[in-house]
Length: 110
Image (cartoon, rainbow, N blue to C red; front, side, top):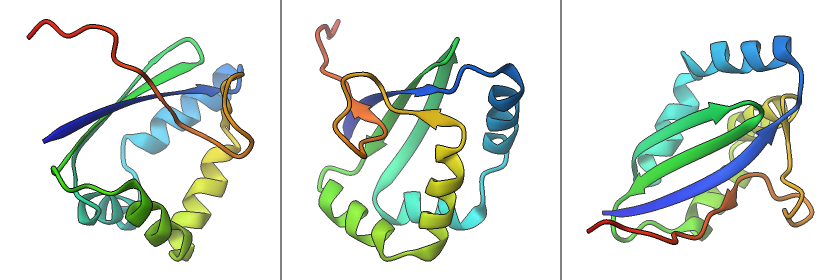
């Protein structure tokens, strides 16, 4: 198993944040399926203020390139991602078009 951690911001609007959280209580089934098929075994998102933190556990041979390619070719994923952008905003250090920015692990207890 591999673990990846990412950060992203939400737009600073309480009503929008509340709606975003409500949507994530029951994500579209097609989105859940694409996540699992890609080899992501668990995904958790946490929020404080407008900052979000995502933990993603994957199979050992998980490929970001394969996931990105599959997502780009899936119109439902594209619709979801465009919808999510109405709530999200890139981190200041994100590259153009980059959403979730991978975080660097700086400590591990074990």
